[in-house]
Image 1 (cartoon, rainbow, N blue to C red):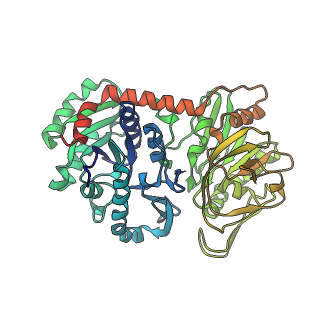
Image 2: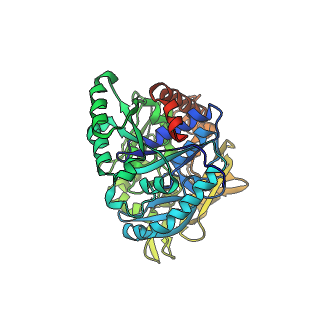
Image 3: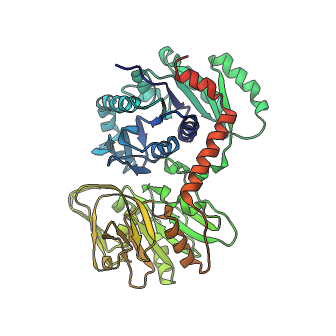
Length: 489
């Protein structure tokens, strides 16, 4: 068996400490040095997923890391993906394909059978890489979940990987987070720790010098870098809904509202809109009405269409939406949001809940949806009704039909997709990533604000941000030492 390539695993002192972003930046940094870099995350929990070139789905963060590395995203980069459907249950995706719907307890029992699959995927990738950048999930010290762990130290031990801790100073308590993590790990796992990185630092790093010494005395770990706050991180796709919030350019720009559904999914659909300098993207949290002055309301994707229809009504957002449409406002639904705009959503096979359930939709499009058939997973391109090019991906269960489908929003590889109301003010489709199509986005915004012109080229902007992120990390992290650690020195 050939010698495995250099590899480095980033594990966090907690969730949302910036592991995904640092991994993406390191992928770009080392790829720019001419290395074949591949990202890997053994287990991820997120409803923000991406379609892969080999016909499966992985976490959106790993797709971004693949892009940063100049690699095509594939199922092996995230072999276990958990997509929450309820507070206690999730869809389990293994090597790109749905294998089960499981409660947290059921999944814990399932984990021992998943480690071999994760190792299989890792080894396939490692066979064609010069460097593996591996990302853990949550906290490295979730000792109550250590048995059969495949996300953090359990995988690091199985794959024999060195570990660098990532800690977020912006949330406070960073010394306790690092020292506490070290203290909770058993000796064999502590021995895998090679150092730590302080992320999201604001202010003068010299003021943190006493803390570095305290951490060294308590743990023996060196500080490998203090990374200042990187504001442009907001322009890159977020891994999970914890990062969601209203982003606004202020002023008198266009206002687009997105209700934050309880199981909102693929919410990076809206990143290109948020990046427009004259667009105020308002992700409306539960408990707040949808803004009456919105130029456009978009219903997003959801991991539970029927459940989120009920949630939407519980919030009173259905009343806000009807008032918005009645006053001449525009509505657009993406995937589950498209399904919600129709007259009904039926679930005869129990895809989302009890078999035979039927939910009343908003009735703003004359269409009906039936949850049936295989899950559609495909990258696809085409054009909209104005012949503007579009591209993106489909990721959905269910089939939608009805009179308004006779006015499709899109034509994708020769077939119609979506629907438009007679007056054109309400529309929906199944295509995720739609707003990354520059001509479509510019045309839509010009319809909302006649005379508006847009020049943002979204894909170029994302790559520019990744380049700047790589430079940022090169300035503030001891990347030479990281390479030595990855190489086993």
